[in-house]
Length: 128
Image 1 (spheres, rainbow, N blue to C red):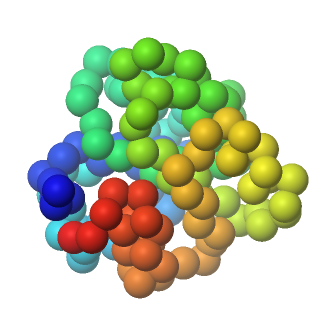
Image 2: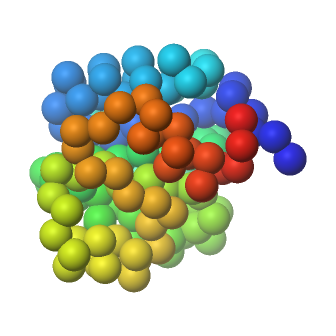
């Protein structure tokens, strides 16, 4: 099964610069359909009303954090199998453990480049 580069990808971050960086990296890797949300609650509404193949979410956001978003996604019958990559500036092991326990697909620590992102995407989605 090959990765569908036309799938809808949702990137979630409250920092516009980070949204732009991730969008540009995804475009470099060939992804076409990239949507953005500026917090977890906006992202959850979008996920429930649209069809997405991947979520890349920041951890630290208000009012709903990336971890809370991940838990909501994993508790939703229609979304629970959705690949979910968490992006954070924190590499504390308790964060990694909390994200793993909540069902994160993979984890990226900032700063990162296209190569790092591609490696995480391949591990979650398969070769593309």
